Image 1 (cartoon, helix red, strand yellow):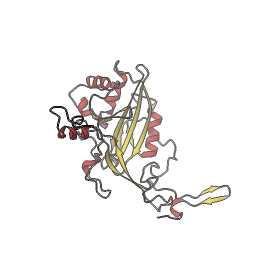
Image 2 (image 1 turned 90 degrees about the horizontal axis):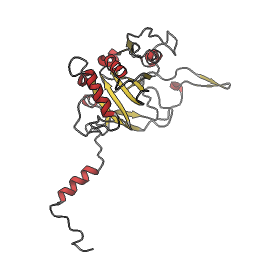
Image 3 (image 1 turned 180 degrees about the vertical axis):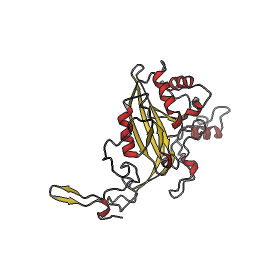
Image 4 (image 1 turned 45 degrees about the vertical axis):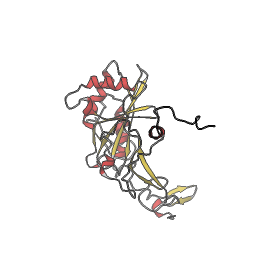
Length: 276
């Protein structure tokens, strides 16, 4: 091949090639100033606006071992594993699918002023794996779910579930409540995520809007200790009424009770042999 065959078109330079490569090369923009597993406060503020087009993962912490246990001896042999905990970054319009129409309609339904204005109520929007998640301020949750249910262009008639998540390293946002809504009218789904600090684990109940969420909120309270304010009867649903703590929090102690199995006894985890 001659040098003429490889010549660049008029006006194209090496700098253009570099820019094109940067535009097509995946970038790892996991928080740069996380050193030795230490996570700074600004890494944990997931509601902060990101630059346009920044949808790369955000590192919020580190998982150690195979199962994430942090108390007691390692009994699995995987204690040396270190895995970053990554959240998908904030998405920017256009989101694709019906997501733009849904968020625009919700914005009109909530309005642009007041404590429940769209920009105040919806703190962050994430589109990941073809699913839409709205991160909603907890005080605005009742207004947002009513708009999603009652607006004819939205009409999310069903809350299919409420669940909890615990991120101990996400300071000020340790407890997450996640709501899955379904529109039978429009055959659409949306996920809402609301956070609360452990020191003030209160989130408004949505039972008034979605009565079927009664049992789901009770289970989330039982397992994670999130207090759903306004719930008609927030009592335990799985554990005994006098059970101490909330078993699905990540800092809940494992074991302590031996397990009988076909005539033999398996010691509790805190008494088993350690491999690390």
